[in-house]
Image (cartoon, rainbow, N blue to C red; front, top):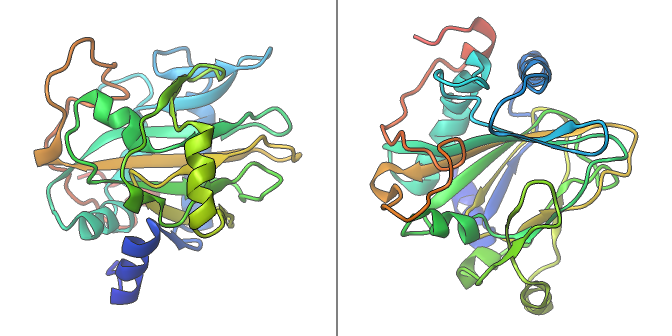
Length: 268
């Protein structure tokens, strides 16, 4: 998939792009079934919330040497529709995956993700430059009542805001202080709701402010996040690094698989 000049310019301006139904229903069904299988296991890298212990976030489905591995997710991470777009936006063929995760918001009970920049955490992982992109793939229809993702256009151009540690949710992370977000909202365009059918893709810059609300609907909202980085921008050594499932130590350049490999399971 080759981006147009208009798409590239829009990404540079806004900090994100959306591609409706870039993956078809057959691919979505396979990915969702695999996610349903994996969330049943007990493994490091799966975070649960609520009294029933439903999975909220699951990591590292793309690497074959771990308990959460899925060939379908490895294929997803290496198609021209994911890896290829990331290569074009980062203008580099040699990319690796900082982490792959699945965020699950169950109907009614799925909770919020506060406003944040991904680089707020990733710089603390030892990554020097904010030159990373995330490809998000919808496994369910994303709606506003269902807790869809929101992007703040142009916020990536403001640089990294000093984050605080958000520990009110089951998966704890670095978020952007509310006063900083409010200040940016005075001058930037209104937040954009990233809604769409299953298979829709959004790709965004690591400094783009984004958040999502509670899932108040009767339907689940599951979304995949593929976080790509330049191999030359891999983390430097730091004290007490986060686990490999969230801060990868596999910095080898990723190679393409066939565009239909999710369905054919051809990983050669």
